Image (cartoon, rainbow, N blue to C red; front, top):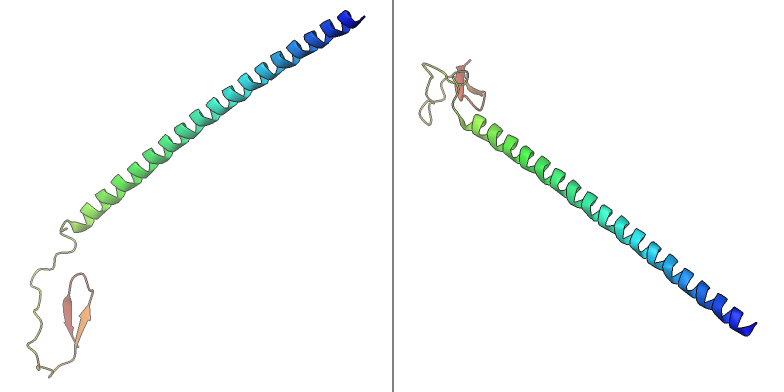
Length: 101
């Protein structure tokens, strides 16, 4: 009887050890999959940030380029200092047009 109990205990011990091994492998696989998903998400985020940066750079370049729409031909110059005989008003900061009222 004592030998049978010892054998049953040994069997239970092996069974528990096998269960723990299976659980450890499952957790390790879950951890590996989480890490892969995190790396993929980081790559997606990095690609998105790079695209946004490139878009912003392209927009900045377009803003720097002179366009015909913004050009003003025959533009008036500012009157000399102290010449306040007429009211002068600045219209459109980008074009710096002078409008004489």
